[in-house]
Image 1 (cartoon, rainbow, N blue to C red):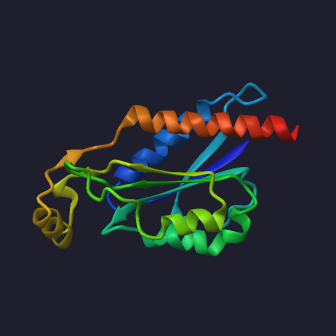
Image 2 (image 1 turned 60 degrees about the vertical axis):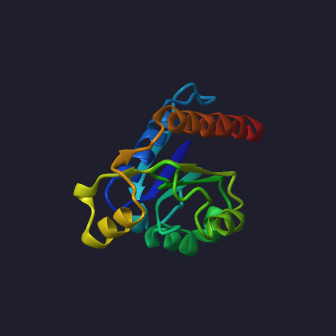
Length: 174
C-alpha cells in the first residue's frame, strides 16, 4: 500500500508531525505483513495523487486558517482525493488555554468535500526565534509563550489508527 502524507508548514513544526504520522503508518502491519510505503511531501510540491492508495493532508493553522498550499492541494485534486481514503490534520493550538480551541475555518467543508475519514487538531509549537516580525507581534498580543504543545504519543497513535483502518479496508477489498 502506498500512502501520501502531504503537509503545509511555515516553520517546520507541522512537518515534524507529518513525519511522525508517516513513521507510524510505515510501521503499521498490512495483510502482506510489511508496513506501507509512505511518502511525506510538501503540499505545494504535490503534482499528482495518482498511484497513492490513501492520503493524509496536514496544515499549520494561522489565524484560524489552513495554509494556502494545503487548501490548493485539496482544490486541485478533490476529484482524485474522493476516490481514496483521506485523513486530515491541523496543527496550531498554542498556549493555555489552547488557542484556537475551535476547529480551523473551512476544514469541516474540506473534510466533507473529500469524504475524509477524519480530522485531528494537534497542538502546535511556538518558538519566537523562528517567527517573522508580524507573527511575533500576533503571539505577543495574544500573550502566548514559547511552547511545544505537540502530544507525540497521541500523534503516533493516530498514525497507527489510520494504519489499522487501512489494513481493515485492504482486507475487505481482498
